Length: 273
Length: 273
Image (cartoon, rainbow over all chains, first blue to last red):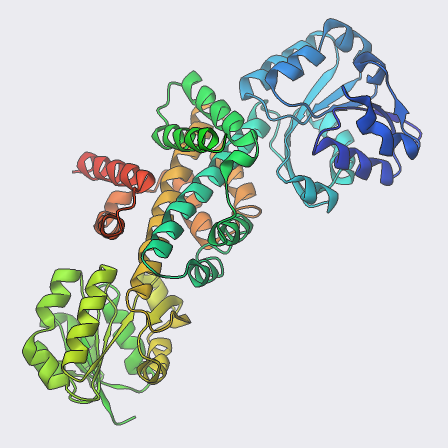
């Protein structure tokens, strides 16, 4: 493993994922807008790239985990693509519009390099605990090459969504939307229970050990029963529900539930200010 | 087990549950509005009561599983309560308003008998397979007495919700509401996936083996991916979402999500006519 891996974006998820990769023995060249965040990695031997371009590995593998579509489009310049060059693979782990993933794939192909989309389910704690779930899509040969890296980054489950670009982002947007629907509906339901004088804890306990025995219901259910849940703690819910709606708009599909969830989350964000 | 058990209501759930009870060795006196439905039970030794009152066991246990609040209120007459009498226990397994359960409890207490509310999670197939989940509430002594019957009827899980009447119906209404929210939101999400050209099957497979690894998501997810899901196949969703909303109305709580779910299910019912 003397091959160097470029790693761009050391945010809440990026940093623990890069650390996992380093711990698995990979040599990293890291870039982050705020360079100080790279310190723990540099202390263990990572190279700090002073610019994005210097993190790009010609003909090798460069991973990025960026905030949104705009950030991804700003990183992937002509210069980036030319440096990545023939045989180069760019693994993009941001949650973006499926349409952006498709455009990116075309841009990379135009420069003889390969785009792989791989999205990440899991909170920063799950990244540290190597309990992420990662759907990915792209050309077979490139996927085979990067699969061990996805696992090394903390993917306890990596899920191959074939060669159709957009699929890994669709599954991410669908999953996040279902999380929002589950958490908001659980809160409405448990609020009714509490207001009616029935302690929500045993209600959550019964439902999340039977019909709804799923990690999402268990974790959110406990937080809601304790009164410790808000969708306004992070900007991600509003960002991702908007991507879901934009994608639905592209195929002219009505989304009454997503519309309501967005309204509820916007109200919550406004109330928390 | 020579004590006879009264059993009123042999509908889609009542019949297999009564059959389970009979198979466990209990002697039944059964009543159903359409007496012919009792035939398989009578063939195995159950006594057919020609009227509701004749199914009531004085000082013993009488079980009812009726369609709704009105049916329950029509069954529980002065005559019913007087015949049930001191020491008599009435286990009501219908899904009704928590408020109705509270009124019923008071009515029974006024006549020296005991009301126990026990609601049922599970489809008729689950009843036959003894895979029901049954939350129940009422006085401790009565609950201890009827717990073996709930298990014999097919309750793989019986969940004690204490002595506060209404709790077993709250958990049922909350659970059904969450089922409606999960199924409707899954359909919106998987429709987006399909419309965007991403096969919903692997999406369902990934999500229901990870974040949403729960029976509800697995069974509805498969049906939705196959295009085989409708909320209009049964009158139960519209009935129970209305009970949820009425209960919320009693405590002056807004229910934006329940309101939308009801609208969507009403539209679906109208479209399926």
